[in-house]
Length: 339
Image (cartoon, rainbow, N blue to C red; front, top):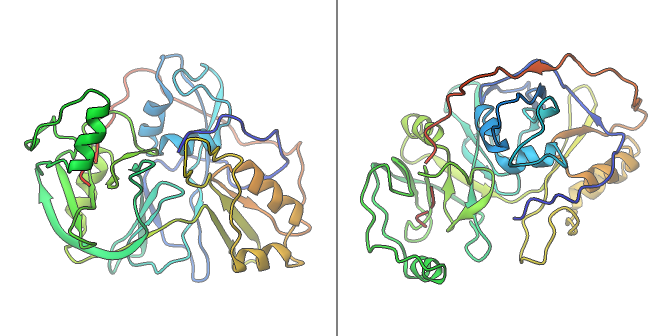
């Protein structure tokens, strides 16, 4: 998936909840029949020459999620003093609140600890074009600390095209592209894993060989809390929509997964399922706002209830000043069917 920098012009979308920061990835589950969680945050970019990935890692966001929320931002050197939206608000996927749910299109993993009224959300990297992560319902078959990596024949061929000769087996340790922890899925021969990385990039991007990749501290936390046998559901839904208990209607649109290098995820068509078409055509939905959201693809929930006021002069909340100085990031470390 190529981050699309050609984003639609400014749209008067009712994006809700830009307010105090919610730095944790842990959210209390919303009330019954509600799927809206979290609040977005505005920050000022400090003058410390950090790339966007470093800011994304601090706030536990994937890189593409930051680009969706902040069209036109320089991913290498965001302009000091400019505002960035941290997209911490989201709609829970319309799936059972059980085990692990991965939505490939939004590059997020949701973990619902059994018996606890909460959800923990992690940004992820997924399979690149030609090695896509499949949709599935499966489970955690094996928990592997300090995994080794045995590249498949196809992975070795792909690396060879770039002039890289992979060893038959990459030993466990800090140089292993699978990181220090791995969860093997029961799908197929066990070739798909949820694991860490030894690179400081790739989270929130399509970079793996089919596996699901997390930042080092995130995979360590998930590994230590998820039991063997946990249900895992992988879906591919670029559009989420919901009607909240108060009647408000929301859509959240992400760039769809591209199929070839010619695809532009910002402009390629999005398939509308039957439920979304009914939601769009309902007289309680503002069709113009929904169409604008489908074009903008901000990756954030947009209020689309019919009759909702849309006021460009509505003041935004105070902007949080991003602290200067050294930021402690996860010791981000690389690649995953394996890497």
